[in-house]
Every structure is written in structure tokens, then in C-alpha cells.
Image (cartoon, rainbow, N blue to C red; front, side, top):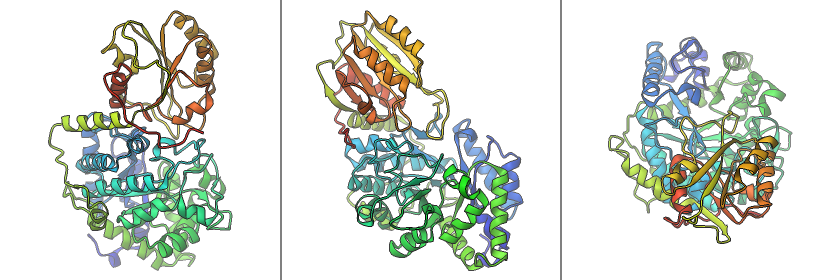
Length: 542
């Protein structure tokens, strides 16, 4: 690895950038960024993934390109949180449960095991950093961007699961990233779309939002991602945490003692890009204390950020020593993480934190059956029957009508799966006489009328709801209410447990927290009485 003092200013600034691109191969965008602009990091999205083998080859190709250019090894990252946020959902990558499902089990050892499995698989395809775990405490039912990405609404539980995830990832040589500092859980606006404020006083922040991050730091987490959220009790100026010296340097570095990498959330998100512009925001983030700047999409913005930071150093706005220190932290991280292939080095601090658990390397060459058994066990421990007025288990002598919502449109908080298994498909393997009507997550009134006519003679009706933002979509609300006029409904919240707050009380209400194939298969056994789930709500439905 080239000594830091041998790097030019442009090469140093390049190390501060983590960039996305739009192809499943090394296209012109990422090639220019690596060869001409010396970027030090790459982030994958689902747009980059065709298969696990293809992504493995792509990682190797990008690292070779960096080596040929005389650059430092790349840090390659991904948002593979589990559950509903999985950029890689192809065969060969275990679809581990998401955070709220894990929170519902009440067992952080399940979280540790999932992170170990996922960390091993990520490392095997050339990824060095996972932008996970989310340690936001989701105590706002209307939160449109966190929701089931959180372990729940109790800070102590979130902290315990977060520490377990950190230990699991880092035991496999993957850098864990606790996010979104100082806390994005109590918000009702998506920072992808606009500015957000958490107005609570410092005592409340200490007890709720900051506790999981303090525990993550004690556990030796490699990186912490910032939130584009304003915290007036920490930063009185109306600026988001990502751009605040008081938050990043004063609180995170000096007061909380974090010595790892501070990475921004993507600066192209509207909470940042609209009021500041991406390039100016990048300069402000570095001034605030960020080490790594995430720009996920646009080449024009990525190049503008590089040039703006270089210019800020040359004009004296940013000291070159600030850049030097940031690159030094990045290089230290790269020496520890980049290029390991399943060396399974456990962070000493992380291993001490979870010393009661057995953090062993995972052998990725073994068959996946043990992983499938683990997923089945976790799903059984997470699915939650909130109430049941005698409608479950299903009567095998009666027919079943299932209404199943499908995600067909990508949003900032949701993506269609490359493979799905509907509840009707799973139930039909256990019971005869199962009919299923698939809808979009935004059904029309005409579609509701067709369902009402079709379902009229059905004796057992299951309505699955799906909310990716803060509110159950109006079309789904209307459908549930109309059906409930003539039927005792079994309602299954496939993602957001708060759906119950927006409908009349159904005959039975079940929460699964996600619609991954493993969960759907276990759910079919729960509904038919073959399994008794043991999940507990990690949030209050009030």
C-alpha cells in the first residue's frame, strides 16, 4: 500500500469518496472515477447485480483496475441490511431476516448468527463493508424510511441487537457501519425527500437515540454513518447532522470517543442536495468531520465533489491536515479489512462485548441447508400473533381466499424482489381449496369491487397488507374496510406492524415484518396450525 506522504492531494481526496455507478460491469463512469479521479470506495446497488458470480467477477475487476492505476485497494460496500433491504437477493446469497423480525425474537444471538452468515458471504464476493446495522430506535409509527429496518422502539434492545450484528460482521472481516447517527428513528419525513428535525432535549437523546451508538462504539464498530437530520439540542444552527461540526466532531469524535470512519449518507438525498448542492455539502461535511463522502448515483456530482474538496484545500478553506487525518483513518481501515478473504478476524472490542456468545468463523463452502434451518427457526421465533378471535388455525374443511400485495415499483425505501413466494402458493402445498388474488400495493377502487364480487362465497379470508412508508396505502385501507363489512378477516401485516392503527380491528392480526420466502413458508405452517410462533411485538401498537 502506497505511503500516505507519497499521495498527491488529488489522490488523497479521491480516497474520501465512495461512489456508485449504473452497470453490471466496469462501465465508463466507474472506470473514470477509479483511473482518473482515484476514488477509494465503491457502493453496489441492485442495479449492479445480475448474479453472485457476476458480482464476484466485478469486484475482482474493479480491484485489478485500481491496482493497475497504482491506487490503494478499493473499499467495496453494499446496503445488505437483511429483510426488506437487500441489494443482493439472487441465489447464492442467504436472505437473512431484517432487523425488526430479529427484534421480535428477543434473542440477539439470532442477530449474531445472521450477521456471521451474511458477513462470510459478502466477503466471499469481494465486499469489505456492509452499511449495516441500522441502530435507529423506531419509536414513531409514521416513520416512512426506518420502520422495520429498526430492531424496535426500545433503546436497550436495539443496542443489544446492534452490538451482536457488529460482532458477527466484523468476525468475518467485514466492516460494520452503525447508522444513522445521531438517530433517524423518531421522524415522520423521509430524508431522501426533505429536511427532518428531531426536536428532543439532550437528556431524551441520551436515553433513546444515542444509547445504541454508544454501545456500538464500545463494541469497536468500524464505521458510523451520519443522518441528514437536524438536532437543535446539539446543533442550534438549522443544519443537518451530516454537516455539523458540533455533531460529528464535538459529539461523536470528542465526547463519545469514536475513532473509526465517519461516513455520510448519500449527499444526493434531497435533504442535502436541494438546500446546499452536492459539491458544497461535501465540503461542509469534511469541515464537520466526515472521513468518507457517499455519492451514489451521478458522475457529474461525483466529479464536482472531488474538485470542490481539492479547491477548498488549495484556497485554505480546509486544512490539508484534515484531509491527511481522514485518509490515515481510511488507510488504517483498508489495511485491516480490504483484501481479506474470510480470514475471520474478530475485533477484540467486539469479541469482549459478546464474550458470552460463540463467535466462530463461518465456512461458506458448506451446503446451505444449515442456513435454511436457521432462517426457519428465526422466522418461527419472530412471527407475532397480536390477537386471534378464533380464526386461527385455519379450518381444513373450508376454502381459503388470500389477497396478496405485490411490490412492482421501485421507490427510495422499497424494491421488487427478483424472486418471490406468495402466501397462496405456500398454503396450497399444505391445504387444498386455496384461491389467491394478487394486487398491487396501491389497489384501485375498481379492483376492490372485483375482489368483493369474487370473495363473496369464501368462508376464510386472509388479507395481507404491505406498507413501505409511514401510512398504509389508501387503496389497501379501503379494501380491508369493505371486506370487513361481510367477513371476519385474518389480516397479516407483511411489513409494517403499525398497519393495525389504520384499519378496524380484524378477527385475527399477525405480523411478519417482511415477506421473504423463508417467512412466507413458515407463515403457511403457522396459519394451518403446524407451528406455534413465539414472536413478541418490538413496538407498541397504540
